[in-house]
Image (tube, rainbow over all chains, first blue to last red; front, side):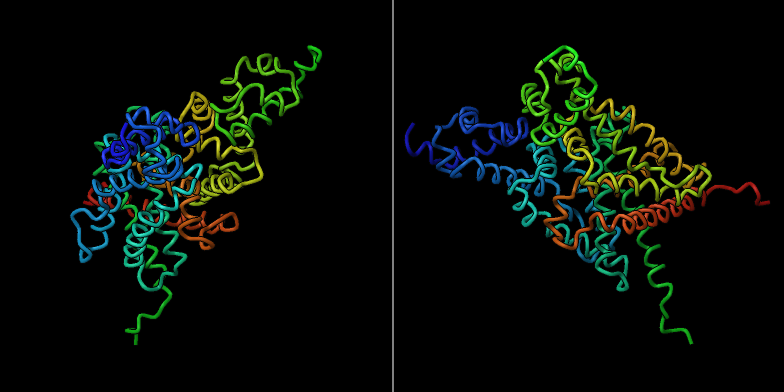
Length: 222
Length: 222
């Protein structure tokens, strides 16, 4: 194999795809560089040339899978910043649910789920590039619904309550399927689930706002 | 080593403890029977004698860790069936949060988290013995708050909304720590988190009940 075959961008992309499948299947530790190159039809030197080592390739695979999911299912789909918070919250929940229930895209879900149980340095890349800006978007919506009286702590916990309702369909998927059988919600219920989570969260936060503001003078009372 | 040393109940317990640590550390696949017996100070025949094979030992370890957590942190602690649903829901959330934030008990959390990403037959045992009765307890509370007009589907989704708010502190623990640093909630916030999740859920469900019953004739209107 020539130097140019090792260095080609096509080889780089094939390495990412082949190793993504292997990492998702076997986990980071149990995949060898040899296996990756074999599946990618690449020279054994190609991983070293494009990524330096298996660790860096893995980081790139996790990031790349995340970017693909984000592009296919943005959490701001069909909404603008001027839309009411319910509309933005629903788009947020729907985007995440679409990523969770998407079986066609790269093996993002399983790689991330693994990262969440046994984090590696790859998780930091996804957090800085993906999770942090998304979390900022969510806390902005939560802050708007809870109103100016809400503390940072309250905003953080309400944001966790929203995210938890969505992510349970990822982290408990195998449990729900075994527990509920055919009754468990799947891909075709994404819209209904997004509606439910939005309604549940907005109602809870409006009620929290009333409590937060209840004891305060409105400034209009004589 | 004598036959009686292999067969002793002490050996059985040591095998469960030693393999629990190993499985949590390395995952089911990467642990050998030899390693387990070595760490337990047991004869290589002991796994076979007490558990038949590694699979059955693993199922027993997962169940045993689950039982320990359940005994230490019951989801019905300090409440009775006649208590109002808020009180029972708070006990439920607190029990689960205690299990999640407990670092002293057997490596239950990590084993279960692993099972949820890559389920093995061991998950079925935990679901039938543990998750199913707990889920029945939760749906009973949810049904009571939502009222008789709620469908099974509504009850299922509301129960998922409650559970998700709790389990996010397990599935997103590593993400939250990286995202929020010292601000992320931990063991010392268990009571505050249980309060928040109860308030959030009860408010949302009461509001859902008003909507469910709003369009219905009360039977008292002339």
